[in-house]
Amino acid sequence: MQATTISVSEAVARARRLAADGNRRLLGITGPPGCGKSTLADIVTDELSGRAGLVGMDGFHLAQAELVRLGRQDRKGALDTFDGAGYVALLRRLRDATEDVVYAPEFRREIEEPVNAAVAVPRELPLVITEGNYLLVDDGPWAQVRDLLDEAWYVVQDEDRRLELLIERHIEFGKAPDFARDWVHRSDQRNAELVQATQSRADVLVRLGQP
Image 1 (tube, rainbow, N blue to C red):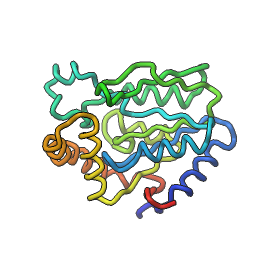
Image 2: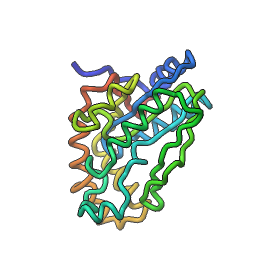
Image 3: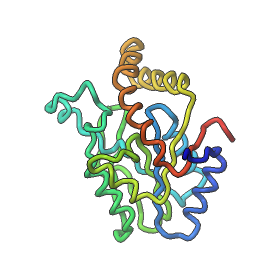
Image 4: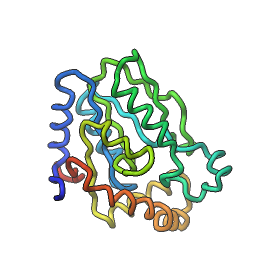
């Protein structure tokens, strides 16, 4: 049975309810590359104004030097180019909320590398939002992620528009237009197919463009 599709405003209301009692809650936002996960995560974080923090899965990208060593630099962004076990360990620390501050890594697109301890999450923060492609993958360490989330949302987007936005993003961060299009249809699309197969594990679908 397919999950209910909700609007952005309904998603914000759900997030408010998660944060309402002040206890630590984890909200996962997932979907294929270019669908608008980061946009939705930013909207919800801003709307909750100080009661929600954002930790991206992309902070667990393997460093470029390690991708070269593994011969995986041409598949950057694929499931096996992330430290899945490290991501799960961070989610456990965030869920436990026993430390005064938990520091999380952040992926910086301008340098195409993760930066360690770039995001501070204080213990009193009631809602931590985490977003990324592979939150609902049921394989390896990733299979542990779903049980660590109080809710999981899957962002849906018109497919042609998603591909267009993804190509534009690659160009914005330095790829030549022809290379960006090839990368999206060759590499990103393989990742998208894996992510799209996980949609049924989400609590709700969120469609951007709906108020």
